[in-house]
Image 1 (cartoon, helix red, strand yellow):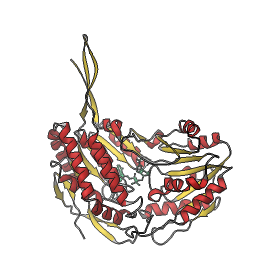
Image 2: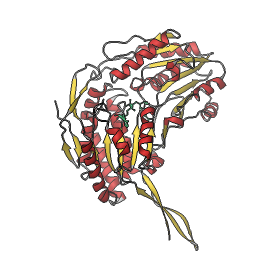
Image 3: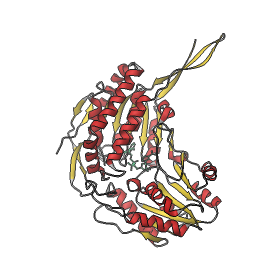
Image 4: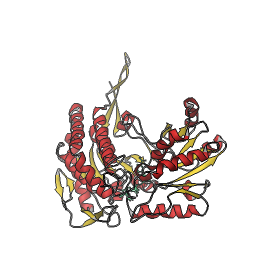
Amino acid sequence: MPNFAMLIDGEQATAQHTFAVTNPSTGELVGMAPQATLSDLDRAVATAQTAFEAWSRVSDADRAEACAAIAAKIGTHAEELAQLLTCEQGKPLNGLGSRFELGGAQAWASVTAGLSLPMKVLQDTNEGRVELHRRPIGVVGSITPWNWPLMIAVWHILPAIRTGNTVVVKPSPFTPLSTLRMVELMNEVLPNGVVNVVCGDDAVENIGAAMSAHPGIRKMVFTGSTATGKRVYANAAETMKRLTLELGGNDAGIVLPDVNPEEIAERLFWGAFINNGQTCAAMKRLYVHEDVYDEVCSALTEFARNIVVGDGRDEGSVLGPLANEMQFDKIRSLVDASRAKGRVLLGGEPGEGLFFPPTMISDLEADDPLVAEEQFGPALPIIRYSDVEDAIAQANSGENGLGGSVWSKDIAHAKRIAARLECGSAWINSHGGLNPIAPFGGRKSSGLGVEFGEEGLAEYTDIQVIHC
Ligand code: NAD
């Protein structure tokens, strides 16, 4: 079993205590992760503060080159990282699983390397010249979730260091091992202390809470649940940290009556069931017009019936188990509660261990928990509507505002409906696809700020205006 350590100041930092990380497909031990203490966190932050002095002065071209070198490193080690990710997270190697995630991590690193925020001249007249500069903020604290741990770590780390900040990252206790290894690889091409990683079991010592309040951290970037995001927001207030919060979603898809159900079934399925539904911007509620309701349900269940669910390490698996027991219990209880009122069209019965088959449930109403809450798992409520105004109102109900989609042959009409959805990203005839140059973020309680593209990069800077 390989040894997993934190990485502080370019060196492995072992811990006195460790905690077990298990494979959700089998329950087998994958590795022991180090349990950080508060003094480990202090040391990581102090190291990052020291490294900031030099890194913030490195030229823009050299920082771009370092980010490109990270992208190449991830590419070279993609298979090793994918294997480790599958073992600790459960997602299959193939399909939209670990290899796909590593491909995304490499692509995002590479695109971020190529982005820049040049100085802007706001005025240059006889009355004077006014320049807008973007300055790095300082030490960035990054906290990541367990669903797409490596891709999300890259989403946080790369724009932070591209703009001259240094980083302390803390992965989820469910999936820390692949991030520990990836940060070790990043350190092969970065100066010491630019990217550091600490980790811990929240129940032993909540390192994430300590990071959010830490006076040496100047910005927090957090991806996770809305409940924890609100804690980060509150804890960060005292030290006036800059914040990017990417939180939960309860994305709705609206299917209009003019669709061809067979043509859209596969895209509808992956919009909802990517990573077993454990994806922030997955489609979590599907509203289908009554004229095509039965046909859409049957095309979708027919497609889903052939999906192979199995051990992530099996090359034939298309979906794996749920990532942890907490998530499994949540899905099981939401599905059990829905059974009384709704009709189970597919799935519904848990498999062995943490396996849960793709599940679709009809005839639920707005206040049923599977519709009203973010399930974050493979159980999709399919709701019948007759008036599109009702579907729009229901899609916009609740506090979430991450994504939404409209499905129709009439793109112009679909775009008019998409414009009325209160969400940060809206898709036509697909759901959940992201692009490293397109800003991504949530409205309402789904988040604060955006990631990706120039707008995402700008979130890792403070503005300085020079009047001369
Ligand atoms: P979570 O909130 O339970 O945990 C996220 C991280 O926060 C973990 O690293 C955890 O250790 C840490 N943490 C725990 N307590 C903390 C505290 N008090 N202060 C600071 N950090 C603390 O979320 P999760 O279960 O890992 O992820 C699932 C959730 O994340 C879902 O709601 C999903 O929608 C959301 N998510 C959102 C996006 C997005 O981009 N909007 C992406 C992925 C996941």
